Amino acid sequence: MLRSCTAGLRSLWALCGRREGAPRLSTDLPPAPRLFSTEKVIHKDWSLPNPSWSKDFKLLFDQFMKKCEDGSWERLPSYKHRSTQKSEDFKTYFLEPKLVKEERVSQVQLFTRGFEDGLGFEYVIFSNNDEKRTVCLFQGGPYLQGIPGFLHGGAMATMIDTALGSCAAIPGGIVMTANLNINFKRPVPICSVVVINSQLDKLEGRKLFLSCNVRSVDEKTLYSEATGLFIKLDPEKSLT
Ligand SMILES: CCCCC/C=C\C/C=C\C/C=C\C/C=C\CCCC(=O)SCCNC(=O)CCNC(=O)[C@H](O)C(C)(C)COP(=O)(O)OP(=O)(O)OC[C@H]1O[C@@H](n2cnc3c(N)ncnc32)[C@H](O)[C@@H]1OP(=O)(O)O
Image (cartoon, rainbow, N blue to C red; front, side, top):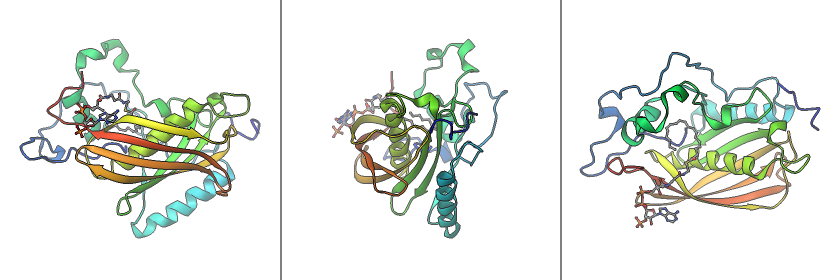
């Protein structure tokens, strides 16, 4: 199985919604000053197929791309370094610049996109905003091994968090994970493709309650089930 894997990284953040008296809505905020160098930015979208993707992965990807044609679904792009308005807002309103040492700034990148093609997290997320759900197609590469032959539970948790987070972002605002509960039901073989179906179950003020399941492509195996609580950040509250 390892050999069949070619050796070769949003979503959360819809823009800050306006609350009564709250000054923040990205569209009417002044341009955020840049805290991070963008000189070395590579604008590659990592959620597109590469040679490490299995046949199953490409087939499913094509099926979802077809669903995007009528506008009901959209593919969420994914970047290693790229600054988006949402990430600039986050840095401006929630991040203390001094927390990140200057010499480290040029090294920052999205955790899930830090591996070479096929070795780590290969994934793409499709979002259905009307139905408030997302589907994440995920192929975990050989560098994500835990028990021999199987995906590390922490790697699965990372993808579940990412998938749920992308769904929590649908109503708008910058959200963070406050609670994540996962039931691991079956181990996930390394390099296999799994489908993470996430949905927004309840919205209560700044609290977003979500759930998801992780299944095999043929839907016969239920690998994991999870629930998550995400909190929409209050621009008037410091994170530190
Ligand atoms: C991470 C955001 C970055 C944004 C960047 C933008 C763009 C980037 C672009 C692309 C990125 C793409 C993909 C990223 C994919 C995945 C990212 C994974 C997500 C994470 O990796 S994220 C890191 C882990 N995450 C934390 O590091 C959170 C630490 N934490 C805190 O920073 C605070 O805890 C916070 C802010 C969560 C809340 O703080 P707060 O002060 O705003 O809110 P407060 O405490 O008042 O709670 C309000 C109401 O929620 C209830 N409540 C709170 N927590 C609860 C709990 N655990 N259980 C039950 N109820 C809870 C209260 O009881 C109250 O309820 P009520 O209103 O009913 O009284």
